[in-house]
Amino acid sequence: MKKTNITDQIEALLEQLDSQEDIANATQLLHKRFFEKSLNAELDEHLGYQKNGIRKGSNSRNGVTSKTVYTEEGKFSIDTPRDREGTFEPEIIKKRQTRVPTLDSKIIYLYSQGMSTREITETVSDLYGTEISPTLVSRVTDALLDDVIEWQSRPLDDVYPIVYLDCIVVKVRQDKRVINKAIYLALGINMQGQKELLGLWISENEGAKFWLGMLTELQNRGVKDILIACVDGLTGFPDAINTVYPKTKIQLCIV
Image (cartoon, rainbow, N blue to C red; front, side, top):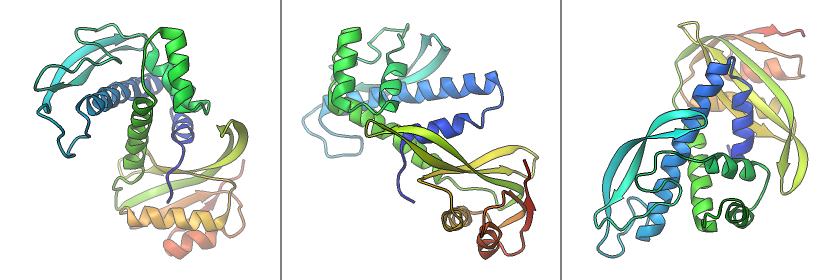
C-alpha cells in the first residue's frame, strides 16, 4: 500500500473515538508525539545528521531528560533529547520551559490545510515571532507520518469474531483543492469483546478490488480468520472477502 496523507489518517481515526475522554487521550498522545518528534528533528538539524546516521563533528546525542510540560490540553511528560557538548538550544520547547503555547496545534492545523512547509514557516514567524526552518517542518511532518505508517503495519491478532468493513467519503484539502476521497475502515471486535481499529486506507472511490487488497494486507499482518464480516451491499464485496477468508460468514448491514 502506498503512503497516504496524514490528515486523512487522523480525520478517519477521530471518527472512531466514542467519548470526550477518548478524544482527550488521543489529543494528549498526539501532542506528546509531536513534541518529541519535533525536538529530535531539531537535534538532527543541530548536529547535522540523523539518529543512527554518520556523525559529523565531535558532538553527538547524549540520551534524554524527562520533564513535564503544561498545555491547554493538560499536562504530560515528554523526553527531551540532549547533546554531549550542551550546545543544543531547542526552539519548539526551550530549556527550562514548562508552559507550552499552542504552536504545535497551529503547525498541525496549517499542514492539514495543505500549506507548504515554507508557507508554514512564514505564517509561524508572522504570528508568533518564532523562527523555524522549512527543513525542520518537513522533518517533523515526515516523522509524524512515519508514526502513522508504523501503526498501519502493526501485527494483529490471529482471529477476530466480528469485523466491520465500511467506507466513508470525506472532503479533504489536497494541493490547495478540496476533493472527495474514500476512507476504508476495518473495525474489529477482538476475543476480549473490545473494539479495535485494524486499519484505514485512502482511495479516490470505493470498489471491491481495493477491498481485496486491504483484506490481503490484514492477512499478511497476522489475521488468520474472521468469523463474521459485516459489510454493505457493494457489488463483489462478498467474493472479495471469501477470496481471502473462504470460511467467513457475510452479514449484510442495512441502514
